[in-house]
Image 1 (cartoon, one colour):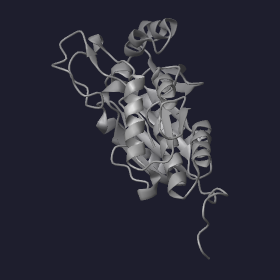
Image 2 (cartoon, helix red, strand yellow):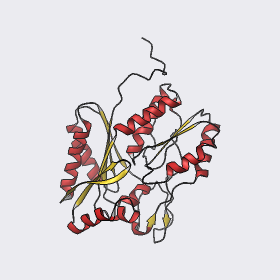
Image 3 (spheres, one colour):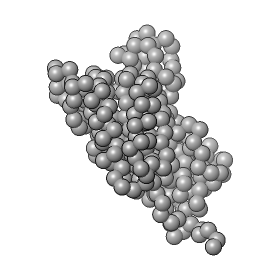
Image 4 (cartoon, rainbow, N blue to C red):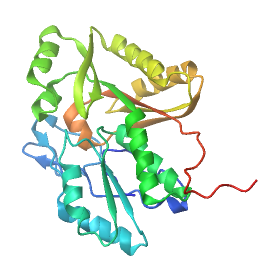
Length: 287
């Protein structure tokens, strides 16, 4: 498995046969202002964010990653990345896939953060069950189709500067001093609702998670940028309201995403928990 640094899965394990959850970083911080050096892209946000930017990894970095995985024993690679509407990362991965010594299936997650992370986990779990490359890739695509991501930002200024949301939407937020709720639609960040206060925005995030969860078992990730207390509070509320909650993660996203959304951001991703039997090409457990 290959992913990128916007999907916060460090330390996650899906079993020894799931492969390697690895890949080149999604972006290298380019500083034109006093950021105090060159922080690692997955590190915490510090300093003045107004002058920071990101750049996609090169095809060469992906080629090196794929070669390393092949040398470690991989016979096929699923390479899942953040939305192509927001970054050229998947494009770089596709450019390198043809040079890989083993087959590579490049997948655009059409999302960010755990909207990318859950499809990676779906593919890794399928691989751990003995699925073929094609079946594991299909598991990732099913996860992409079923996963929902919502988030709240203190201001739309960071998204406007980075070009990730339209100027008109950012002006609405600035003019009215509203607290915007956003979601990912067709791989793009879109304005979902406008509320007046941060407390109302967070309460609305909670309601959106409950609606997205429906009646089946789900996994939920609460994500934040420098807002650990808010994230834990939201997580506590969700644990009480979601009857079929299988697992809830609280994670701080790295600088690659944080640059574009800004400090104080709080987001959540909801995905159905796959309780179906293993795919046909997976070995069935003995009775």
